[in-house]
Length: 163
Length: 157
Image (cartoon, rainbow over all chains, first blue to last red; front, side):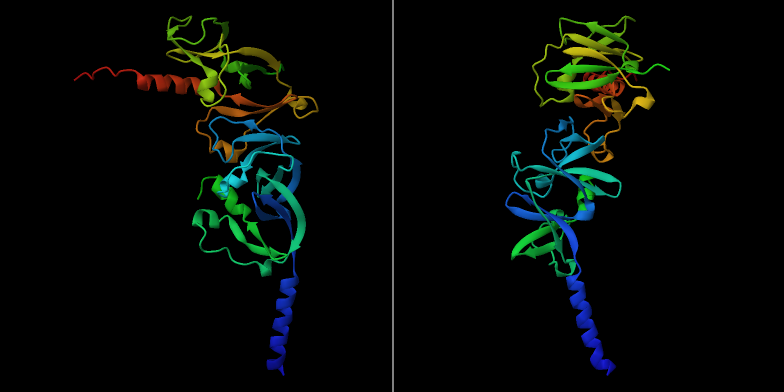
């Protein structure tokens, strides 16, 4: 009896795990859709010209003031190896937080805040270069379209120059 | 206790902040940046345009006819800028108040990636963010850079 019951329990547990979701912020960079766990997202704002900091790396060209906090602006597209786009009316900053590090991530457009089930995420394709591949947590699907899940801890490590 | 005096210096479209305590003298120098002259102590003085030094790729269309003198032990450095204004920094209990100004550290993530350690912080003012220059550090680096370009004296046996 126990031998028959066990697979049913496992199947039920798998189904429950697949149904467990977390909330993610979806956004666009170029033609691709990306996501960040909403727990890392503090706020969103429209683009405004950052204060340039001479001698800063191109990926972190300046700073902005958001409610009394001075944050480094991160050109996320450049960090991910995408071609640069000029800011327009849909350009936004995502104010993200990882541990004690706060960032203003520059992105092309905010799409939505959606629930995704981490158990259903696909692995990052091994064909990606290790340099970029480690910045991704996995691939999700929404209406058949891929969503690239970002790994904020690795993004911060890359900005620190640690990889 | 009196508040620190800070100076706002402008070079072309860019403005920065300098702590008055780092500045030995402010002077009008209509000739602009030139070669090495002599300071009030009779020691050599290096004249250098601050804008191109900070940001060689930035816009450079200033008059550069005001000098900020920083005195080092063996020589002085005259940083040429377009315009100098004075600003009274707030008392500690005024920092962060609406309409006030506050000097904060640069974000550590950015500070560690800068090409040169020339910025001491950021001033949040009514007009936006202004970078606070560490003028003594810049002066020391200018002098070191110049020393490395000078022809070396032959070593004595």
